[in-house]
Length: 103
Image (cartoon, rainbow, N blue to C red; front, side):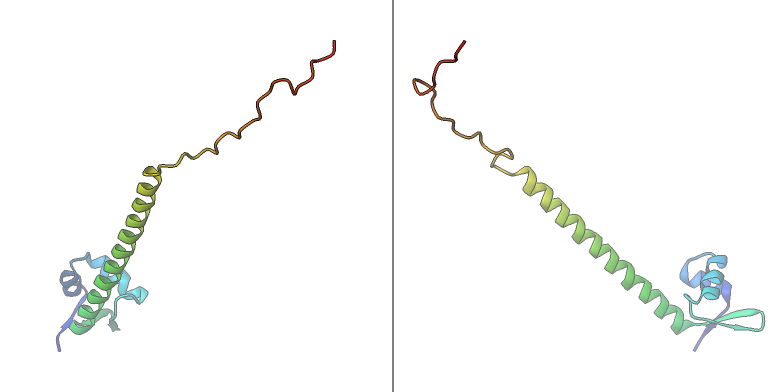
């Protein structure tokens, strides 16, 4: 089982050294502080990276599904064939039924 220091772990994950240190100190990146140095197991780094890939892939799929649903709603709205307004009511014909106005 191979171990990495902060620089090697950062290179492995393709991130900045300071980012790796901050992630480790915050508990996001699994590692142990031995004395004044951080030590990371290769298997833990691989699992960390796999988890990030799964999480981000899931988020992208959810965003795409929401975008697709919104696009479908927009298309349905634009493709509407019925008028949005209510039709005017039919009024009775006015004729002899109306009495002349008194002056």
